[in-house]
Length: 167
Image (cartoon, rainbow, N blue to C red):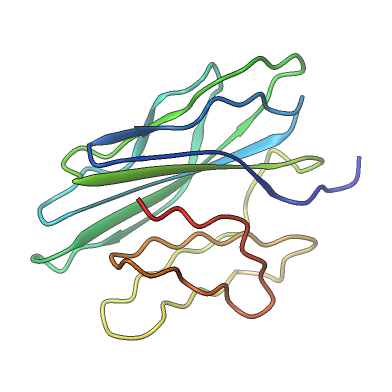
């Protein structure tokens, strides 16, 4: 099966420690990527998936921004493979201590269940965070950004934005 175009399939946000995605039915055997982020003015736990929708979610990477005061942000990416006969599900992401939590689920058909080429980055100064992948992507690169501001963020050159969740 050829690699499909990433698609936002579910999202959610709350002014709370957890956020539950909208209900969706995954495509059979498709890669599901869930991005869970939280922000607060005090310490946060690492994001986790507490309502798995019957899928087995594996953490991919974690990025924390915490300079000891002010806004703190934590973002974690997870991956799961949809079953061969999927049904409607909802995913809940939890970040204990967060004043705001978001979850975004992206689906990629035809993708491998093994994700090895990834990086995360945090920028503690003014400017744009930068990441460098260990090797050039063979067919696809997906990026997720979490920030503490009210304005949408422009997609980097060469990327197409598929969703902007501003909870």
